[in-house]
Amino acid sequence: MKKHRMLPLGLAALTAVILTAVGFVASGAAAPRATFKAGLVSDVGRFNDKGFNQSQLVGMKRAAKVLKIQYRAIESRAAAEYLPNMASLARSGYNIVISAGFLLADATEDVADQFRARSSRSPINRSRP
Image (cartoon, rainbow, N blue to C red; front, side):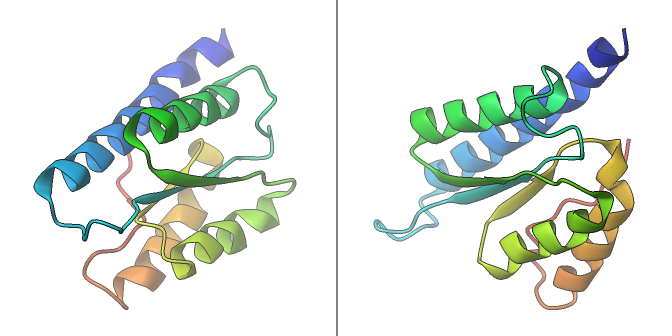
């Protein structure tokens, strides 16, 4: 039952990645050789949880194939890894960083604030439902 409640969250994140990538590519804002890069950070459930983490990774792989984007998925093994994992992707120039699950909410907000101060186009979306 709990897994089914998290499915809409995973699907919403996947939809956001796809729409962002499509909008980016369709706008022609990128140079011909530029690549849209999307990052995904799991919670401690990891990507083989048969739940929303795994669903988001499957969606990310599909988006990468269909939209020809580059992605990197980082699996968090402890809550203390959330913030450094997201910050690493943001520092590496990823256009969007997706945090998989509500457990990452505080770290997501912290990283969004940190990178928003450096750029008006922060790769971290800190909106909460």
